[in-house]
Amino acid sequence: MNRIKEFWKSLSYALRGLGYVLKNERNFQNEVIAAIIVIVAMIYFRVTEIEMIILFVIIMGVLIMELLNTVMERVVDIVKPQVHPYARLIKDLMAASVLIVAILAVIIGIIIFIPYLTPQVAALLK
Image (tube, rainbow, N blue to C red; front, side, top):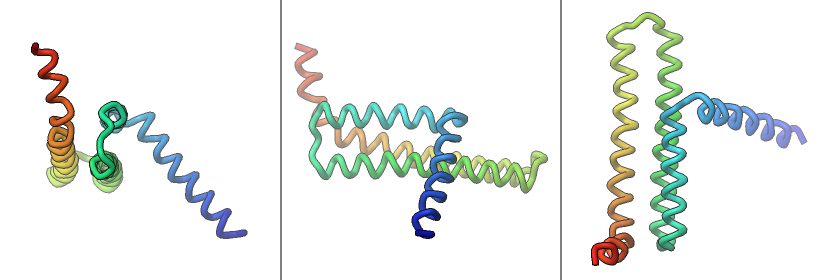
């Protein structure tokens, strides 16, 4: 019984953290909106199961990286509240990691969706 209570307690902490980023972090909000658009596109174009898995993995990867970026920013702010060159560098490096994963997500999205979009684009051009 104690393990179940601990599980629900841990889950509540995780949901509180998720609620925080959904409410306060603009980049995370934007990435969730992008994820919803991709999920709608997956349903609309009826992508294959493997494509769906790849898209979900990359969506979660972007969101996880954004969460890690937020965590690192908060830790740096606590440890080094004054603007220190290394504090700024750490934040910039974390932002760069999110950017790289987001670029990867866009590339994967293009590779997966182009074959589905090509017939629609051709039809619009006729």
